[in-house]
Length: 191
Image (cartoon, rainbow, N blue to C red; front, side):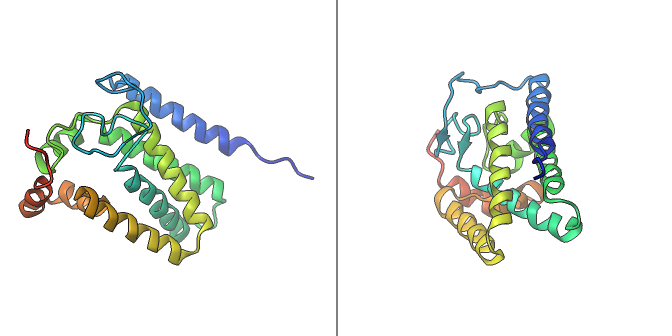
């Protein structure tokens, strides 16, 4: 009987620690401005959004994991699953670092409905990395049609619920459309 290889677990844990260290070095707060721990917030207009373990945007990170699984299956399917997973973890950690840089924070404020966005707490970034991991493993275990259906349900559900989703997020970061921003802001509480 062969022993299970533990290096992928240790390597993934090292990436989580690396993300923590880099964001701490960037001056990010662990719990966010209010200093409180929380598992979830569904209100994208509250100061708690992007500060708790999960929020409405967690669904986008689950989709990241599903997309990374599919992309890596297409371009690197000969690599062991554990190596593809580590590549996905590194890509998501890289995005979390970029997302919390002044460049992207300011872009969100200028181009999207996230007018008061200050970036993610470290707790939220680690939660996002965890959600991506969940999406990767769901895509590995589910039939392709179920994965595609899950992505459609999450995208449409978030569109109806918060007037935002991964697709609109990408559009608004790359090439903002005023009509989309106006529609999204129609759901904002009066400040």
